[in-house]
Length: 318
Image (cartoon, rainbow, N blue to C red; front, side, top):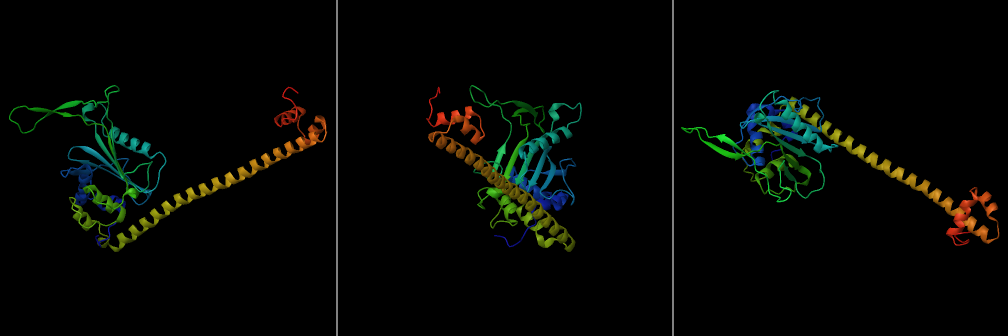
């Protein structure tokens, strides 16, 4: 285990990872996740999906980058649970596609979007910490996958040559649930998730550029002013999380109180009904007429009859 404490990855995304000289850290993470060590980030894309600046909400940080394959890679770190989280991911991916598709452009130029969520809360029910999803089409009858291919020109050949490759245009989604990760290294991406959870590099990590992450994300590199701003970020993040947890706890307690009050009210009503029934049954057995019992119980004679029928004291057709 490394003794070098690292800054939080969401803070790094807000600050130093937006600098081109530090793209290698992002490339290392993305290469491990997508299992492609040749990923090259070209630039940060200014978009409505990007949130930069100290005034932004502290529970969420996002970054949109473009790689050498012209893919738009959307990275989001979410610190607290958000209602309709999957819907927000779909909206973000769709918005990126629309933002980067010029009106009148051929659809063949539509942006390929990869959405990556690093979540510090448990989303749904599952037994894994890393999930992948995209759109595929399967036969209703055969259950086989529909394969659609496109022709790609081979560059560098003396004469026009082509190959056919499977089309891969739909957004791809990666969900990383940090809280479910058990600090066990099985794959390259686990070395990065270990950083997300522990703010340090696991001993023996060999993933591409993870050594650069250890150096560039080290807290010891921060100036006094950077440290003050970072400390404020940590405090506000904790406050934001505590505020949400408090609201949940208050909501839970309010629900418990309401349940108790409702139970007491229902209990009183039920007790009153049982008391009226007992009085009617005992009164009828003592020879008191239905009319008098009706006045005593302040209910209609038909209701008295119904109670007596339920107790078998008068016939059903009586």
